[in-house]
Image 1 (cartoon, rainbow, N blue to C red):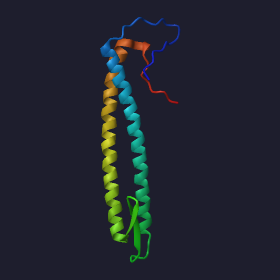
Image 2 (image 1 turned 90 degrees about the vertical axis):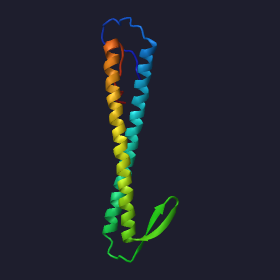
Image 3 (image 1 turned 90 degrees about the horizontal axis):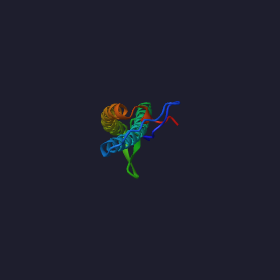
Image 4 (image 1 turned 60 degrees about the vertical axis):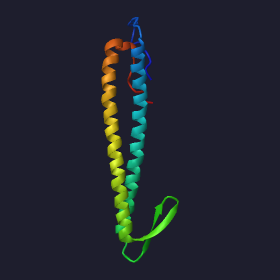
Length: 136
């Protein structure tokens, strides 16, 4: 992740990497990786949230209020009235929205930390270090 690169014909300066610098580079790499994992988790939860919203919308379109709706809890389906199922879907959506909000706050905190580390590392190593994510 933090590879030293040469830009153009500029000679690479001889910069000593101290133990503290290496710790900062490692911290940057770990947090950058963690942020990617959190963003993937957020996307998955947002997809689940959309699925819950779609189920809720479909449930509202039902004409017959006397139908029992199967609702999955773990590996088992339990039948509930339309109103109970709607309430369960709303509760599940609220819980998922809170989880997404918490994850987004963690991503924001990590982005702040990465920004601070970038400033420190680029100040010392300049063009001899590449801290930009590969867009591959």
